Length: 267
Ligand SMILES: Nc1ncnc2c1ncn2[C@@H]1O[C@H](COP(=O)(O)OP(=O)(O)OP(=O)(O)O)[C@@H](O)[C@H]1O
Ligand SMILES: [Mg+2]
Image (cartoon, rainbow, N blue to C red; front, side, top):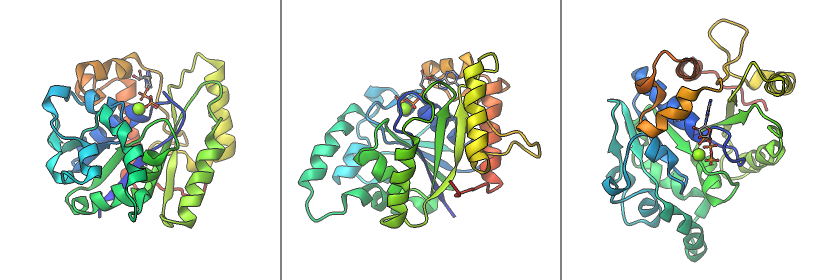
């Protein structure tokens, strides 16, 4: 059974792409066949896996427009089990096209495109843009579950209520089985009191929705890590850049929690 996981938070720069790339790589390392769909016009996930613009003739925009099948745009990566469906800046044009596409369920476009290939993968991870617009709605409508990265900084929980209410609306309409897999604290710094405070708030309000780390009581959280910030510039997931770094270990812990079937869905 393929699980489709959207990584979403309309706040910018909270670690969505870093999570999408490194969770995908960690699941692939655990011998799962994984497709990462870059669904953000910024195309950061595409670049993070070392794909150069001149290597990409067709991208997810062409799939949504119907000129290519999803299977026709998928690229291999440096990891055997990891594949990517790239994005490009042209994807910003899709919103206008959505308005022109009468008589189609615009919110279900990605879901329908994934149908053709879903049985070929164990996991499909979707990286979404920093907005609650049509792209994120498509990602959430296509997904079985969602992971919400929360940056351990000031204003971390701002906007969360809006995201949760969007998820609720989708559950009541197009995607009744959508589960919140969990919240993932990112860029945690133990030196920083604010980081500790945000983590304490998350534990207080959403403890059952945090990923458990092995048998320990601790939850999985991603530390602030220079290695994690550097690895995209080498076009590599952290596993291929510095496998033993604490950032890499955190994403491997996340993959393990997911493989154990941790799904809260209570938030
Ligand atoms: N744990 C971390 N430690 C240090 N730097 C990080 C960490 N996670 C992400 N970063 C860096 O922070 C920046 C934002 O991260 P990322 O691109 O993953 O966020 P995003 O939510 O996808 O952003 P956007 O909303 O623009 O798509 C990037 O430069 C990234 O390399
Ligand atoms: Mg991003």
